[in-house]
Image 1 (cartoon, rainbow, N blue to C red):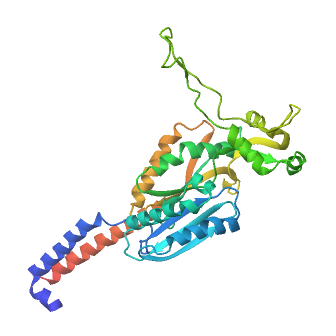
Image 2: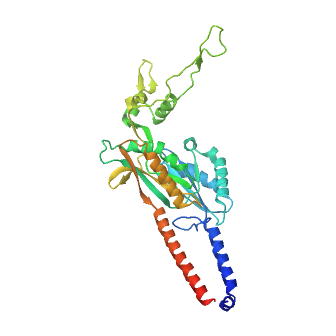
Length: 362
């Protein structure tokens, strides 16, 4: 083969130029990430059942989902994880070469058929079906400045969940954002002895809160049909959803025949706290909240990381004066270094090939 090209230098130049041109055309279509995507496509299904144990999740959620996923086209295997905090995750792996978009649609259709057998609390939270890469692209942390006068991570978590996470999820290339905290919620710490003493149960408390913490339309005053003398109309607004511990404490659990009543504050302590205390985050010993970005399949790691950091910089202009953010973990830096090394190696190879062809193929 070498003799063939040595005797035909012009043909060797044409082949070399053709290979170089083909490489330049295809390089823009190559995925850019820290590691090559050689694993078969995976779809992640996440379910949340508040207050449920791992055993309850297996019996009422995971087993139902796994049964519905059996028989999916090109299914290779699936594995499930059930946590004591009420979350279940099923990673569905398909045969190599399977279109991940079609696989995700198939999974969603199968889960839709299984909703009738799922607990209502799980359906209220919703089932998340996502296709993401295995590792984290980057992690951001939100914490207080050194001179801040407060140190409440509940405020940090609620601010990040409401003002940062959704903005980042909408960016191109972001497959999933895993949040290491939670939104603020009304925490009801029930005293079991007081509850039993009043002859009540947890279900009574749940039903009372659900029934009295509602937002209902009250209609309008003076709307049609009305008399001809009625010239004004007004929409009625009534107090609906409760929004502080004092109002929740006035929820009536039971009315007695003598006119007295048992209220929520009589059997429980109420406060605004985190929705879940299962995860805590610290940066250099300082409490904070964090979010991890996972790359969507085929996305450009450098472009996505650049978009995320740029969006964080924009959002930071509206942060409270005592809050700050940082990005302590960013794999796109390694990708930048790797690409730089590849470019150097490519240039060196091109120079060597040119010299060899110029000196020996004359």
